[in-house]
Image 1: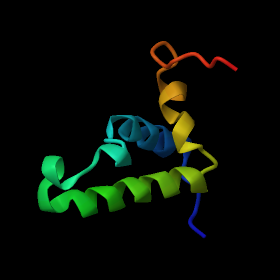
Image 2: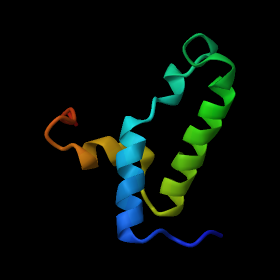
Image 3: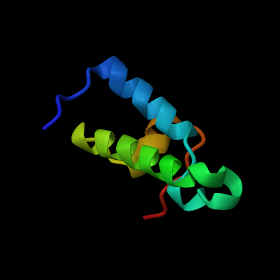
Length: 73
């Protein structure tokens, strides 16, 4: 198993993840022949977040609480 990231590195990874495209938005038309590499890179970052006990689906709201949609439940 990988070592966990220190807090500064984890924060930097969260910030970068917020700017990455969502996997559902990656396609050959927009990303050309690199679309599979882009998908693999997104998956690598998601896995590193999970290894550090961070839910990738919650990162944007955590890093941008003022612009994240409110939960309705």
